[in-house]
Image (tube, rainbow, N blue to C red; front, side, top):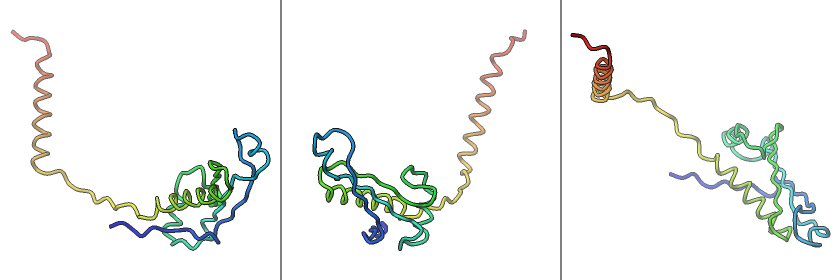
Amino acid sequence: MTPPLLHVAESEVEFTAMRAQGAGGQNVNKVSSAVHLRFDIGASSLPLDVQERLLALRDSRITQDGVVVIKAQQYRSQEQNRVDALERLNALVNSVAQPPRVRRPTRPTYGSRQRRLESKSQRGATKALRGRVQD
């Protein structure tokens, strides 16, 4: 069963426009098309268990203060970069939306224990044959 996809509301996200880096000619020098997205995990309306799993992630996009920072500068228009940044944030949130499965320890079967002991004794017998030859 897949959990319902979580969507972060745009009202909880802070966008900042800035100039993009890299090649692009004069468009890069003139237009603020890149977008900096900031999302405070603690102040969000996400469920508490999702917030905890997000904060526990070892991701370079999450700061020590629990703020997700995503920089989007792939597209030439600011609106496309906003949509891209929001999609990446939603993908990050949905990656931890489903709780991890609980591992229930199991015991080895009787047959697997017997096979293990048999292989150990065979291995020991093989090694015993490598010793000095007795007359």
